[in-house]
Length: 231
Image (cartoon, rainbow, N blue to C red; front, side):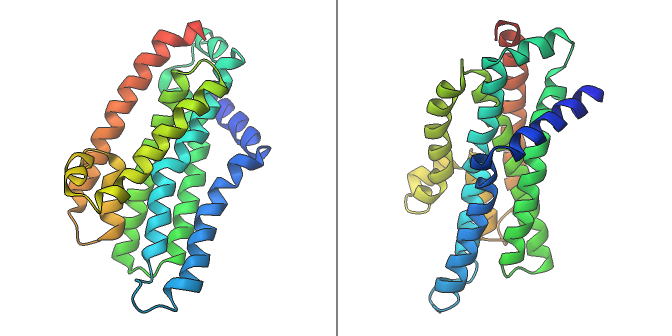
């Protein structure tokens, strides 16, 4: 518990000092708010929540991947990860400590999205559930990419295209049935399914997201144990 707390506090301080990371949690809901007020509400042909759900899905699907990836890569580059492993820090402790602050920040941002949107109570619960689950999955994915990178530069080069692909694939899938078929295994597609249509199969989408996060967690743990002492 002490290890998690120490890593969490360190990450919180580092993030607060990094405006480029903080702005990510502001820009997505800000764009959603502006486009909703200036475009959606003044155009009867556009659903009021279209920009909210669009920006929320992109944020949960790709916004957190690059930031969590950068944190892990920084620890590897500075040899901090090696010392943590030698000190006996377990994979789950390290992941909770580094990703915990991101998840809290992502959850707060999700609440802001929900406040901007015109949702019922039931829709709000579904929206927040899938957003938080998706954010957690993105954090684990980013952590895995960071663990596989030698330094921050390599992490950025690897995480950006992956984040763009998984973040925008649901948008492409909405225009292509073949893409939609294969994209259904991605957690980002399931986020998009729910936030775009609250009558969709909620349990099924959560199950797919759950499978995604379990697979990514297993890969992270294996990579942490295998590469950590080499970092």
